[in-house]
Length: 243
Image (cartoon, rainbow, N blue to C red; front, side, top):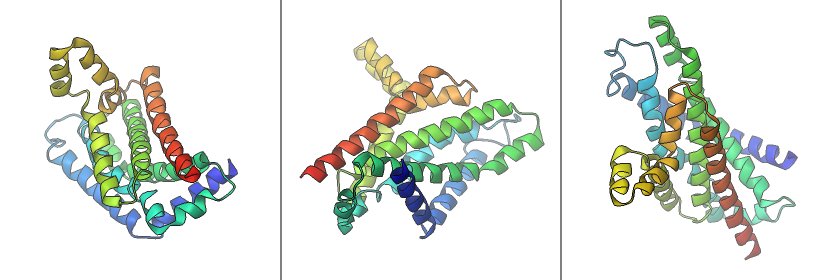
């Protein structure tokens, strides 16, 4: 595990060595605040909670996380440094897990910087801080799931634009799968398809956390989803190492 932590520390420090960190965090905070207070109707709801904020987070991360992951492996391939990385005496999953942990920690920092919203609702009323904490846990899990998917896509191409577009498309599929429009459309064809779509929906499982419910099936879903895409990432790297 030393190799994993070494890679994670290097990658995490690399975010703050360039303007990437500042740009990502500023865009995320501005969009999160603007959407919460405008489209979310935070001020006019007369309720001390963060439901408007949590309602937008999965869709914000859907675009911003692929912007982070598009360079994880595509840039390494473009510069030719991936060959050097894969010749090191480490297993591909060490590099995969290290890069993912660094990106996950970075997203957690960005989410933590939204703490003024928590202070605001506590100042305005008496919110259920347990539900708010559960909502933030859900946000972190959604970010981790999107990061794993985006990183796997990035490993398949050397073009960052393609990695971004495919990453957004993949995250959108799993975010929108449980929406009423998609689920009802599939259920009309075959009822079981609607249930399957809801079962694979990131937004559907995230909804439980927003309601303050931390259920084992939802935790298992995010663990399995993230683990599958990290495994796929490692398989792609192992194949490239062999070829």
